[in-house]
Structure formats: structure tokens, C-alpha cells
Amino acid sequence: MILEMVRANGAVSLRELARVVQTSEVTVRRDVRALEAEGLLDRRHGGAVLPGGLARESGFPQRALAATAEKTAIAEYAAGLVREGEAIVVGAGTTTQELARRLARVPGLTVVTNSLLVAQALAHANRVEVVMTGGTLRGSNYALVGSGAEQSLLGLRVSRAFLSGSGLTADRGLSTSNMLAASVDRALVRAASEVVVLADHTKLGAETAFQTVPTDSITQLVTDQPPPECERAGLELEALANQGVRISVAGPCVTGGAKPGPERGDPPRRGDAPVPPPRGGGAHPGLGASPPLGQRMPDLAPSRRR
Image (cartoon, rainbow, N blue to C red; front, side, top):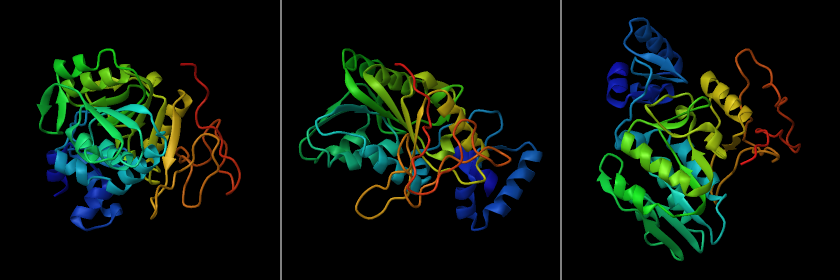
């Protein structure tokens, strides 16, 4: 069952494997380790991927069902960053679709997107203008791609771009497994003054074929708190922060709105946790130990001129 899921999706988290096979993550981790020893899959950042290094894109239904709680928390946090009357671009993806559902409550907003799902989520929002790119429909993620989409973005300038992807590392930045999708995402980035990446912990440390946003072009990452067994994700967060990316950890959602996690200069909130320490325990170099509630969190990203 585990091998079939990895072959079908390209990459699956241990948490999702344990849920589907109805066993503990400890048992799943042992089984994954045995399959890796046989060369049938590779272990990566709290999950398993097909052997060969690069994760491939899973189908939309699988992506929509993966890490749903984490995506909801990330979307709530990201929606809180958007100001009334702002003009933004929102890329395609299941996390950005969750963001769009929450942007409907921001008045005077202009949203430029190549995603049919983002546009649908905002179609009936009062005082939100939706501008769609041209292009050719890519049915696997309901996004417009190709030269038509890229040409329609020429001359556009907005305050921020909100993007997700298939993988995120400190070395390569954000990446995706489809060349046409990557090209449109790069055009969206060129139109924005700042780039906000939305990526749950299962994307951290994942390598996919086509780079969309290099690390030095990412202004802010909104993510969830990686579980303790995802050591690779914690190390990637540390490396991203050291390269000047502002790290925002979204806490669990509660009724009535978002419960944002710690960000540079913000005090932690009950239920939130700091970026996990590297292997062996202790605080990240330069970040310090987690302060008590009510004290200020350390800055998770050094200043960087843009």
C-alpha cells in the first residue's frame, strides 16, 4: 500500500501514509525505511518520494486532500497580510485557492491570477476585482499557461505576489515539476514588488525540476510548524532565514479567524511554536532559545536590501 501511494503521487508525507493505512507513524517510518533499503523509494523531509531525487507533481485531487489543516492555517495568515485596496497577483495551487477564499472579505482588492480556481473563489466577492490572464488551460491544476498568459502580464505592476509550488529549498528556492507552469510563475514574480511563498512543511526540502523563484527573490515564507520528525524541514527553515527570507509560522486556525504564528519581532501566541532546532537539540545559531510567552521572538531573517 505504501509503495503504491508513493508511485501514484510522487511524494507522500508520513502523516498521510499513516492515516491511509490506519497505523502509527512509527510503524510507517519503519516500513518506509525497509522499502528504501530495497531501493524502491527515498525518504525525504518526513515522507517518502520516488527514487531518483526529484519529486513529481501529484494529481489535483491528491494535492487538495494533502495537509489540509496546514494549508488552512497558512491561508488565514496570508490573508491577514493583504491590505484594503491593494493590487496583488495570486498564482495557481491548492494553498493559493484557500487564500482566495479568504481574500473575498478584503474590500477594494484587485487580484490578478492565472488560476480558474482562484477566480472562482472570488467570483461573487463584493468590491473585489478579478483580472485573469490569457493562455492555454492546463487541466491538471486548472491554470492558464503558455505565451498568452505571459504576454498578458507584461507591463503589470502590483505590490505582492502570492505563490505556492511543489518544492522549496534554500539552495534553489521555489520550484515546480511543470515547465509551462514555472514560466508563468516567473512572469507573476516579475510583476510584483514583493514575493510571498505559501508552502506547508511537506514542501520544505523537496526538489522539483523547474525553478520558479530563486531564494534571493523570496521576501516572505508563510508555513506551518514542522512536526519533530521532519528534521529536514526545520533545517531548511533555518537556512532560508539565514539567506534573508522572513519566516512566518502559521498557528492552528480557530473559529472567527486566523491565529498567526511567530514572525520577525512578534511575540509568540499560545499554541504556536518557534522554528524547530537542528538535529541534536539546542537553539538555531543566531536565533536564540524560544522565549517565554509574552516576550518578543528573535528576528528570523537578517535584513536584506531589495
